[in-house]
Structures are given as structure tokens and as C-alpha cells.
Image 1 (cartoon, rainbow over the protein chains, first blue to last red):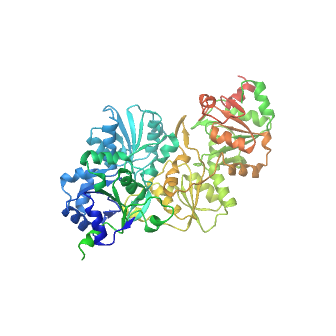
Image 2 (cartoon, helix red, strand yellow):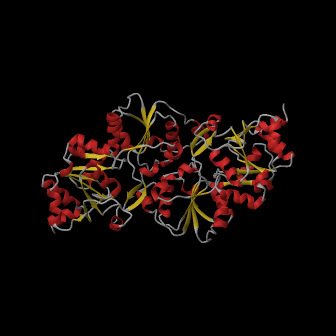
Image 3 (cartoon, rainbow over the protein chains, first blue to last red):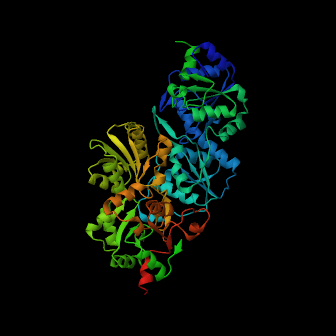
Length: 301
Length: 301
């Protein structure tokens, strides 16, 4: 593990890679605030001819929504670059359409937000649930109306700030049919919001694990399906690629299991104390205080 | 394991016991419907001088509310009999006030319904959360207002049909203080409703387990604290007592670990097929199709 503190050490990393896989939340921004120096770092990497691919486990936004967010924050991403954004909702759409070959007559019940519906709809998969079940069960009659439904071929769980009992009750009922697939967009147990943590997707789906005694197929980092999606598109060489992220158990493991170099930033979930503690077994190749520091190292103010 | 099918076999059980511990949902009633013959069975047991104690893991109602329900269904329970009703919310109140000696200046944050608040308030414990947090987070500002609070000395989780992200976010934040106790009224992973199952308390608290990496102290059946509460009050002899319930992993294990006789009824969660299957390792002393059958056996129509 090497700390990137000087132009010399940063150069070794930058020159050894053609592609950077960049996690977004906690790396480029915190909440709605761009981190200092990130814009300059991305410009620098682009000038050097590097390919930048954005990889996030957040399932609440579609790739289009991320493109808008990147541009709103001034990161100058062009419209065709939507293809360079890989979210866990998109990975779910790829998994269902290409790996599982989800039948067109079946529907997915979504415990999650609009991003999942958008990505699944784009590949022609029928959805229900999600925002349409935002209002909770209001009567015994409504509770009794929740019954098994063979048209539901999969339950997909993502992050859902509007989680409620109706969604758990419906998902539980559909999953009582063992042929109904159980899929989670990602397994992150916490969700960063403005520098603080709250329960994440990997926590919100656990009531369905406990009640059904089934475990979901988990997509997103660090699971391989996400890397397969990216490689199918870009066919990069892992040993000339660096995964940059703030989370050891998703971002860094994801890079390591794909054979890429790994760079941990300390602007997100992982503290330097935790990184160095005996509890931590995941060691990245490189560490830097902030992605923005790369721009500063090469273009000092 | 003996099936109670005749007056002879039923007599052996009835004559060998002075006290019957009765689970309620799935034993006396399903939803709001009294099961056939239950009224006659309870009258018969009372005539024979048996003590009837009602024991439920359902945390949504206080003992007062159960008394009202028992009477509304025509089971003729007198007001002083509220002392014979033991719910998991009451067990939680006993645990906090007598075992933990919960400090009077601290508050409990409740992920659950009114029954918990009622029982905790009755023993002088200050509560917050529960029904007052029924409305979910509506803005980023509200999310940011959820911060650690040392006045919260415990998070208590029960069944909560109004579960939402605000409650999970607050409970997670309070539990990030390791001195804040983490308590669940019961561990039932499913919740019976009108003859069907939905996710229960033991499922709904799991997002907090996954996100905090902490496990709650679980009260209610089959855990011993509930039996300690009952025995402190009635001091019955376990070998002259029968625990009657519909659930193997709570009711029957509860009786077995307390040294009572056990009677499984088939009007609730457990099917005869499951009882007899190789998957099941929990064998009650006696089985009957329905508690109501005892009344029918002794008073045939």
C-alpha cells in the first residue's frame, strides 16, 4: 500500500493505467457538493488520454440522471458518455435481460426507486411496485388483497427511502413462489448521505431474507456481473486499469477480484484509522486523501 | 408426541395440569375471528378450576387492549384478569424497569406501535418514536436533522406496520452509540394475518442488525425473560403446567425450555405436514387439530 503524496508517486499510478473506473458518491462528491479539485483531476486525466468510466452501486438514479448530475456539478460529461456510466440498476437490467433472459410476459416487482424502473423499462422488462407503492397499507382489506401472483417473475430490491410494510408484504408474498427470482441491486449495508451513514440497500432487503429464508443474487460492486457489464462494453486490460473508490468492501474488493489496480480515497466511508486497524483485512494498492489531490499535485495553485 | 383425539387422551392432559399458558393468535382466534369451540374449551377448563394465563409475542397491543379483544370476542375475561395477560411489550417493560433498571432521565426510541409505548409508559419509562414518526422523511433537511442523541438509552423494536426509513435512520443513528441498548420485543420472523403470513418483528429489525453489526436482546417467547415474568407473578409448578401454542420455534420451545408440558394446535402457523417432516426437530408432547376440540370432546354436540 502506497500513499500518493507527490507528483512522482502519482505519476507512477497515472502512467501505468489507460482506464480509470471511478466510484462517484464519496469520491467525486458528497451529497450534492462536488469535492475540491475533482474537476481539475478529471480534466488532467482526460488530457492524458485516459478513459474514465463511472461505476456506482447507488440504484436510485438511472444513467441519464447521473449524466445530468455530473453536468450540473460542472464535470462536463457529454451525452454520449451516458454509456460510460455503470450503475447497479443498469447492471440489474443487463443481468435480467442477458444472463437470466427474463421472459417478456413476466413482471418484476420493484422494492426501490425510479432508477430501477427506468433501467429495466429501457431493456423492455415490465415492472410494478416502486414509487406506485409509496402509500402504505391503509386497511385490513388492502392487506388481504396482497396475494401470490405468478406473473411476478422477480423481486428486485434497491435503495428505497420510501420503504414500507406494503412493499415488504408484497415482496414476501411473491417470493413464497420459489420460482420468483430474488435480486438485490447491491449489498452495501450503509448509505452515505452528506458525510454521515444511514442503512443501505444491503440492510433494507434483510427482512425478506429473514422471513423467506432465501438469499438474493446480489449485483453491483464487488460482484462480478458489474465488471462483466463494463468489460463487455470496453474490453479494457485489467492490469492497465485502476478502480478508484471510498469503500474497501465494495470498491477495492471489486478492483482486486477483477485484477485491476486499486486506489482508495479517504473522502467517503473509510477512515484512515479503520484502514490501518487490525480489523481491516482489505489493503488497496494506493491511498490518497482525496481524488482532487491528483489535480493539485500536477497543477499546484 | 400424542394426538388428542378422544376424551380419554384429553383427560390425561387436563388432569395432569393446574395451569394453561395460552398463546392467542392462531390458538384462540385468527385475525378478528374466534375459532370454533374455543369459548367452550375455556369454560370447561375454568369449571375444572384451571388457571388460564394468556401469553403472546404480539407487541402491537397493550394488556388492556388484549383484555378488550378477549371480551369483544365473548371470552368473558374479567378486568382483574389483565394481570393474566403477558405480551411481549409487557415483557419489555419488565425487562427495562426490573432487569436493566433503565434510568429515569433517559428515553426509549420505539420502532413499533402504540402497545409498546403504553406498556413502557405504565412503568414510568419515557418514550419517543413509534406512531409520532409515522410520516416518513420528506426532505434532505429532515434527513440531516437525524443526529446522535445521548438521551436515547435504548431502541426497542416490535412489530410495526408503519415501518419507514425515518425510523430505521433514527434507530441506526442512536445505536451508533454503543451504550444505547438494542432490544426486540420478540423474534418471530413472520406475522400471521387472517390465515396468511407476512414479515414479522424478527424480520423487521434485521436492517438494524445488518447496518450496525449489533444484535438485539430478544424478549418474548421462546426467551426466558417472558417465563420469568409469569413465574414471578404466579409461581406455578412447571410440571403441572401446559404451554399451548401454534408455533414450534416460539411456543413449544418456550414450554420445553421452561419445563412445562406442551400442546401444539394446528389452527395457526404450523401445518401437520411440516410437524411430521424431517426438517422439523421440535416435537411437542401433545398435538390437537384445534384448541376448540377439547370443549367438543368433553361436551359433544
